[in-house]
Image 1 (tube, one colour):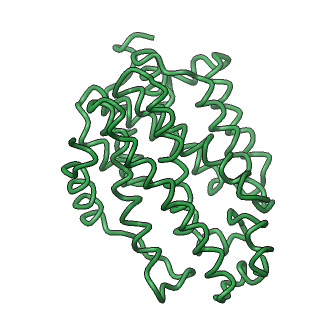
Image 2 (image 1 turned 45 degrees about the horizontal axis):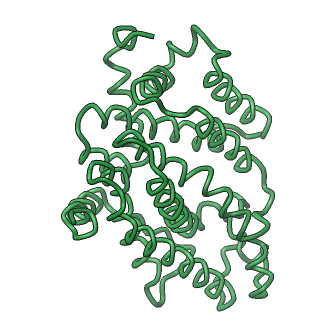
Length: 287
């Protein structure tokens, strides 16, 4: 598909979609050069479309059909309707221009089938597998847009995604619990004698605090490792990992004593921009 085949408003559509539904990644993309930014926004818009499926359907089957459309599109089984979809058109362009691998994109869509059901996340290992195929994959693909692929970037992406994903799960607990969706590993709930029904009821307890404290500790370890690995990737690749600045701020907020786990505490857009600007000038991203 030629660049001329992609309507100019597809670019705007993707930017608006990411800005509305994933502002931290949108803000991070502003620190990338224009050409790479367009591809990053296509990648992030694709992720938004996949993540939003859960909220757009009332039953799993229609959700699976929507996710299957994306995996079919990535395998080349969808033709005319793909070019008519602004996100698909931009994603195909990014895949072609930056030689992005299709398999992790398809796996990302497949992994989000978990979101369509109310099955609990069984173990911490299962959660790490889910986040590796989703959050970590996004970091790895973004890094490949910014610089040639490398083992160092893949290693960094894995830890970055695990840190970000765990932080997002803890932040989203009020919303997920209200929908009887459980991303907190059942294994940890059991080990800390915390009832799933208490979580769904929004009941605060020392047992739940212990579960969240353990998860925050896991995320902080992954974040520390990820930040230490930034020096091993080219400077041109580092903007792909700028969302780690927001992860660091989120984990600090989530670790505050007395925080109520079922009270949403979203960060303002201005604070997010300020956080990412400071991160872009920090030692980890500039040395």
